[in-house]
Image (spheres, rainbow, N blue to C red):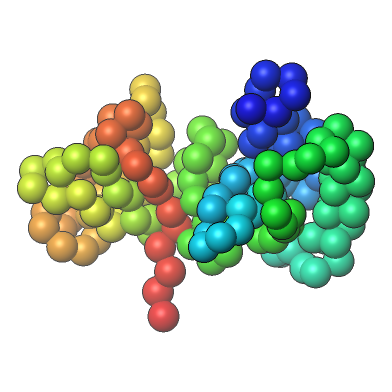
Length: 160
């Protein structure tokens, strides 16, 4: 837990969001992950046309300086700011609305009709249900609705 009793990710999101907005960036998310022996605090940003190194550096400078002030002994080893990548995660309602019509991959915590991974065209998030028309695999062409609580992750699908 961070000083205020909030989870570190929530604290960083509240801290970074106004700075990201002032720089014309969208704050996509914040995560604290352990990779090997190290803990990484990552802030993901985006903007129309994509983010560049200068965008990441600008936000990193201001947020890192503030984190140094409020967390003298941070619970992470490295702080990074980056784009969410081509396979951007869809987490907020606004993400689902923005990417209606795009191909996505949705994974569930437990199997639904014998499978946990679904690839299809996103129809939207309505009444707490992620709706997509399957474009691959079992049920191709069918439209399914998965309860948001069943969804472990939803990401843009990347085709090579």
